[in-house]
Image (tube, rainbow, N blue to C red):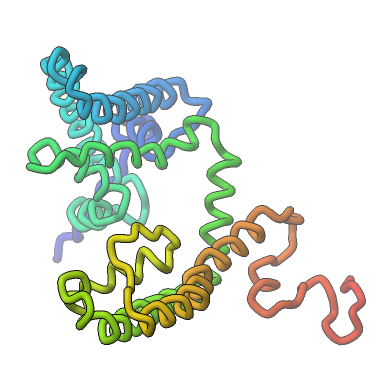
Amino acid sequence: MNAPLPAASPTPRPGSWRARLFAILHRPDPGNPWARRVNYVLVALIVLNALSVALESVADIALPWRDEFRALEIGSTALFAVEYLARLWVCVEQQRLRHPVWGRLRYALQPLPLLDLIVVVTFFSAWDLRFLRVMRLVRLLKVLRLYEFEAALDRLAVSLRRRRQLLWVSVALMLVCVYASSALLYQAEHRAQPQVFTSIPATFWWACETFTTIGYGDMAPVTPLGRWFVGLVAVFGIGVFALPTAIVTAAIIESSAPHEPGTDHAHKAADGHDPAVCPTCGQARR
């Protein structure tokens, strides 16, 4: 008689330590005092790290407080490492991550856990990437009682997702515009300014600062043909570069519009018709 196969992961007892820790770290409820305390400490630690990174760039502050900054960095990294390991341990409380090995691996490869890991690894990096720690505040919105802010972000993400094809098209147009204008201006200016317009890739810098209206002036045409071409490109190219801004603005306006309960706004946005209104007669459906 064959023995029964073991379950992917043992079912935790109600009220077990792993389940309690899961409720604090992964499903924080503002009504849970331990969730508030733990996550408020994490928020304070993240803010302190962001401030220390900024203050350490000031020589008059960094030198006298060097030991304190180092102690804060070591202590913060240790706490973040413990938090990451704790999240990795309790993540199997979720049904879709029940397997003790593959479930934890799937969790570790998600964007926010990867960011948590980067926060820890930055301590051993040659580059100072501690400023990334401030991005971890995103996962603590619920604990900070910022439900409306989180809901607004969700609506904006949905609106942008509906327009992702338009965004890709606008990005493609921008790249084509940069490449074509750089190649043409290089042909017009290279002979007159070989030290400035050294190559087409080097001229990409001129295109970017022109289309974004920065205009540092370090690369400017001197030939009549080049100036005529730049004037023409600047007028029409700025319009191409403004397309993503217009698309994002439309998404923001849509996400900020009032949402009536029970109305299928996603369907309305997709086909242009309100499902509560008959497209033939224009009368409200009952």
